[in-house]
Amino acid sequence: MPAQTLDAFFRALAKGLLAPAYYFHGPEDILKDEAVRAILDRALDPALRDFNFDQRSAGQLDPESLFALCATLPMMAERRVVVLRDLEGLKRKPKVRSVLLAYLERPSPETVLILVQGSGDETVDKDFARTACTVACNPLPPERVLRWLERRAEAVGLRLEPAAAEHLVRSLGGQLGMLGSELAKLAALPAGEPLTAERVGELVGVRTGETSFDWRDALFDGRTAQAVRLLGPVLDQPGCSGVRLVTLAGTTLLGIGIARSHLDRRVRGRALADAVFETIRRCRVFGLLSWTEERDRWVRWAGSWPSGRVRAGLRAALEADTALKETTISDEHGVLTDMVLRMAPAKQEAA
Image (cartoon, rainbow, N blue to C red; front, side, top):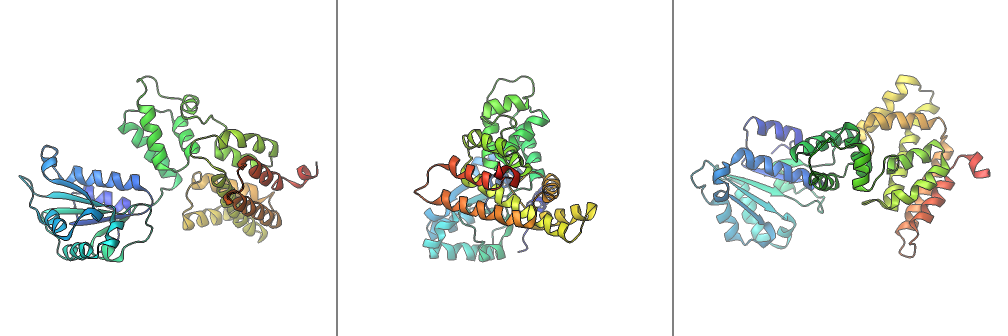
């Protein structure tokens, strides 16, 4: 069965088009949960949901119980919904898998079967993809992370100023799970005026001007002293680590290198911006700022980062990554300080 994008899935669902079987895979579990909830809302009458909804771990079923689960008729309704999670468990149960595959070849018209693969398994199951409507739940582009956050905040009754929403995204990146968790905490506060960026920073422990992206900007702008100073507060933030900062720096260096390669071929102005943006769009870079913001930064930084300096920066990032992953190294701050100093402009290195 042809694969669908997440957008196409929601458009079809809005039209009332339900497939007999769905297969959700990919790293974003929170998007899978939202898709499952949307199917339940579309397929089932809330008053009869308890009678017509089953959710099981696939690895805990035997062939007979799986068949009965899928073949049971709905009660006082047009259809029922069955959700099977933990599909990885089927690898140890070939007989159960065989029953499931046989069912998918001829699914019941009264049942909507939803297969949800965990984020820990990155392999797409070709058999499920062939017989079920397959939807990949991948990380959202940066612009869409902000829209997702705004919709989620509205759903939980939380009022955020635009700058506050942007600060949350800059603080936690595109990690939807962490963003959802922080929104739930903020929603528990007494209702009042919309939360400001400063207030959100106090509550989540990431002050404005001290996000990982602020550290990255200081590093590549050549503000070395500020980049070193920011390491302490940034590393103390929830969900942050030395490896994450090195990854951010390394990804940025690759982007600067791409922009610099165009610059060295005398590509300038709008043509340079378009070429860099097309690279970002084609590679679907995640975990950064919006694609336009990244493009503008890469183009701007390329002017002060010649190819030799980019290569030296990548070597410094690789060595820092290796050091951080060695069990004998525990001083993240020291490793990253060394990396920052090695990436400093030549005049600062000499000072």
